[in-house]
Image (cartoon, rainbow, N blue to C red; front, side):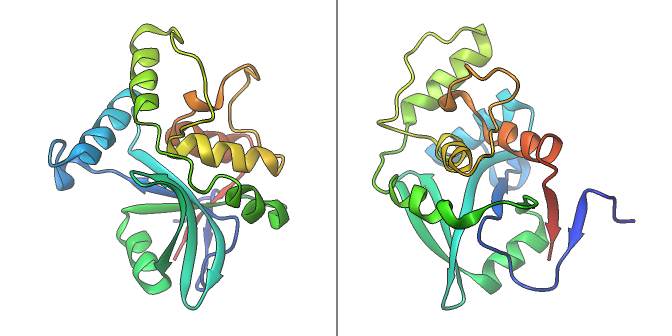
Length: 193
């Protein structure tokens, strides 16, 4: 039975849909490369399978244009609609749709982040914070992890995913935090394809 928090769609995703990578360490391994290790660490310290987040900023020529931070920095990555839809159906990606999201600023805000290097050190900061409960390092916009960049884009659209503490820095927001905040506070719906 489909719950109230699920929306069934037979058509393509929309601009503004937030996409989450669901990491499975048993299928993918924890130590095959640096990103497998990063996914493992994020999953371990957030107690969530959500280890990566991006946002659809455009749909062009049968491609979703997904804005995201990855090892090459922040950029727009074209991803084939059919291929991505299959990954969603297979469960390796999840998609949330935010009701009444004003999407007119999303692409413009995301364009301003293009070229921002990936925050490898931010992953270390995040792990230290999760272990100690202390933010020992200064926040910076010079480098960003995926969840920080998406949290900033959503914030520019009036969607705050930092939680109740408004002093909470964007670089301490995890993909799991974005996922949970969107569902609980902003009533985002899981999109099934």
